[in-house]
Length: 119
Figure: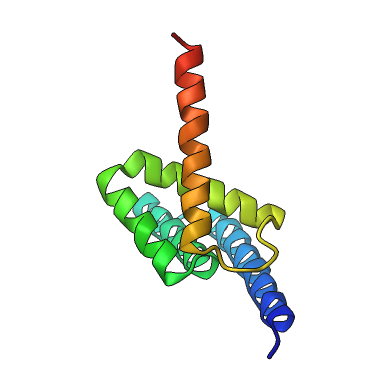
């Protein structure tokens, strides 16, 4: 398989996961018997599946370490990654550890700029 074929497969799988998540959310709205904890667990499982399909193993490991030490920052980075993937910013390719580091640096610069503006 060529890289473009793999990219197309990844993009298709990402769309399938997003559709599956939407269907689960629609189904969970109909299923009143599901507890809030079960719904939250389903959403977390879908989130982790999406992140696993978006990131290389090295990038996922780095993000997990960040989430362990700084849960809020880890969650914000995960949100940014998922939003970018939904917009197609990654072109169906997995995000490498180097790309994740670049994203983290951008995040830190923006945060520093916002912090300095509020002084």
